[in-house]
Image 1 (tube, helix red, strand yellow):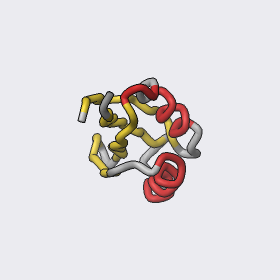
Image 2: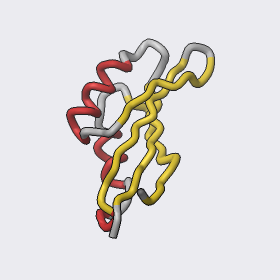
Image 3: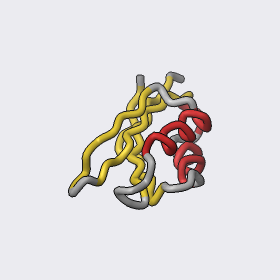
Image 4: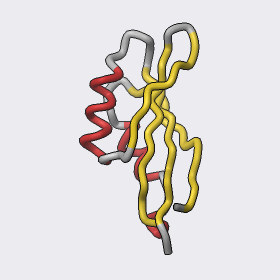
Length: 84
């Protein structure tokens, strides 16, 4: 078995939410390989989180659950899963 790269889109509850605080908490919880800020619309920005996990670990569901618990997070959606 190999490793899987999971890409997850994290939407904040609004434009006034501190994305840096959300990013810091996500980094503390799951130690992602990369976190990028992506513009969405009308000043709203989302975080794109990339994390490599072992193939047999059950996919991104556990990562999504941890991120959903972060204050200021409105929604979490896996946008990509690929074998590396």
